[in-house]
Image 1 (cartoon, rainbow, N blue to C red):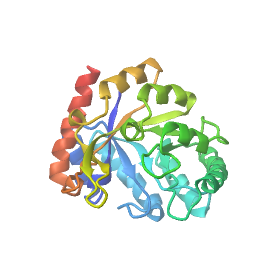
Image 2: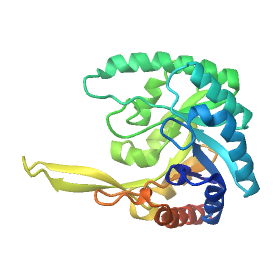
Image 3: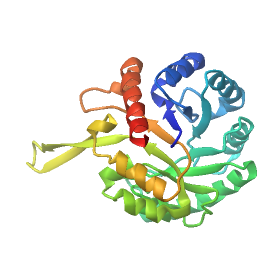
Length: 276
């Protein structure tokens, strides 16, 4: 029903032919490729590397489906990166979000972010690329779909939408059906990953606390079957990106390529089985 692509953050440091062979082996249909600061492919390298990457992936039977960028403002670097993405034939990307850090007033940041997203939209239109902001749990303006839509109030959903991440919504407390209905035409792309909450008593106060861990889809809180059914009901037709970010408080599995590959392969098989 849906093409299954893999967010290649966990294997981004592999040589491109090795990455392509591995993603094909674990059952991916395409690649969701990081190209942002601190990634293996930087925005400055995009013009040279993206065409090569696309050819390598295609030679392995994979599509270069999406690019994950860190774009949050319309500047010369963003313009050059979008030109490179356009030349590589990629039509859908993720753009950056807005963390509400210490000393930052959320309302002031929201006003600035709304202005910046409207300017980013102009660049997306120029290069005929659709961009999206991922809803993301935590202290960010995109803490849920409702907040992300407010961030994008001044944007045309044809060009700037939401990368819907129902795994993060299980932490933020926004029901997936409500979120999808709210998204409407802003539903741009979809990620799948699944958390669990680990509860503990604060040793200093005795207050009950919780922190998320990220686990294989079958073991977490995400109702993958329910989300798939709702996506089908609203007519979503694009790819689903598997985010293989398996981690606990004691072990960062995502730092180990072989271990992550096995879990990612199981997640891909799990989604394809649900679709059948």
